[in-house]
Image 1 (cartoon, protein in one colour):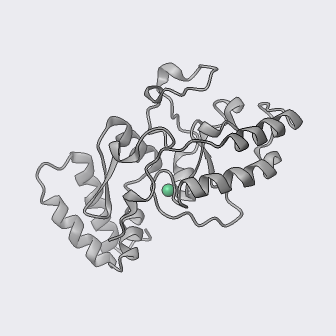
Image 2 (cartoon, rainbow, N blue to C red):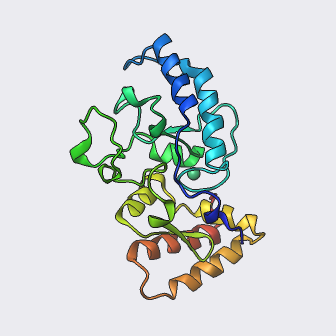
Length: 220
Ligand SMILES: [Zn+2]
């Protein structure tokens, strides 16, 4: 089994040089609700490099290695830029995420309902309803069970799993593949896991779906 959880704790401290670079870029091209995110290509390349090193190449949400294809944007706004354009280049508001997590999260709210209209960037992690990948330790919110299945260990972890669809069967299958475990092996583990009577209802439902999808050979 790959010891993935020890590779990246989730705590990131944006470098001062990066903040200066952003500051210069914003001076040249001021942020506005109509500014195109692709206008910041130079600074985005630097941000991508920085987060890739900090996150050890892993997605901030599912923790799988990111395969950057140069086309799809893997720089993710923790608070979506449509919700507050002023934080488009806020280093605390950016992480790298895989295309699947990014697509699933899309414009869903990361902040709790009472904090969605604030104008100062929220550094307090209690304002978030999902885990803040830079400020919250990952393992305090989400854990990996039986090597391939994610488990929420906090309400934030639960919400992150829901918003980023971390129960997707494809994720368990992908993790297992790295250990050279085939789909049959994953099903066996899922069945074994379902024997645990203390399993929450939603986790049981998800495991059942995974088993069904694999057996029916549905595209995962
Ligand atoms: Zn991901």
